[in-house]
Image (cartoon, rainbow, N blue to C red; front, top):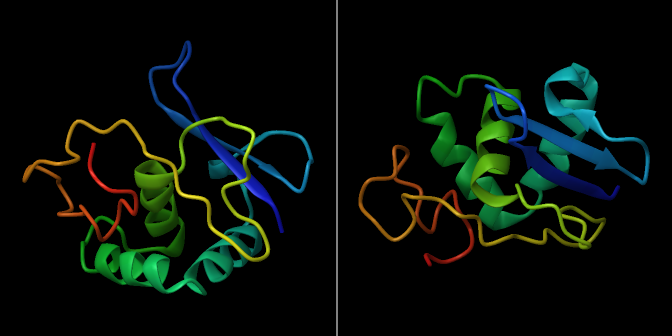
Length: 121
């Protein structure tokens, strides 16, 4: 499994997470089947830092499905389009995401070091 995520902010009112799965065509995260979401969620949850972040997100009522937890985790860690896959068979490649809350005490999910894996700016 190799997946690259990116956040499409162009010409849209709502930001859309897109992904490329094993060199297939780009598709929207929102259009994945429950089985596909489950596969990605389970793969990411095998890594201790990500599993801790998932458990943290599960405490918030607005993240009550695996899809919502995964989506927020992606927003916090994988929204840059680059030449490195975010998920591979053996690794999670975290990105230093531009977030106005990193390094502050204003994160809505108190995620510094828990949900956003890369350190603050």
